[in-house]
Length: 74
Figure: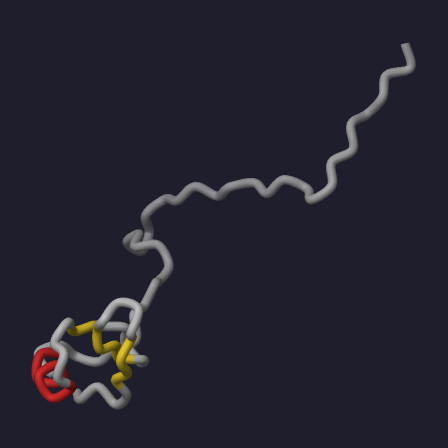
């Protein structure tokens, strides 16, 4: 799939795809697009854990937001 929007990042001196985040260090836009065409334009996915179905997992207990210490009367 073609990268729909590539912009020049002057700070890093790279062409940058705004959809998938891939970069190319070519100066000419045409050369950068040729390099980027080697990769699919997919939105990076940060998924849930990769545990297999039926595998046991550990649940973490959340701490209460505001814990007030109990004062002793002694």
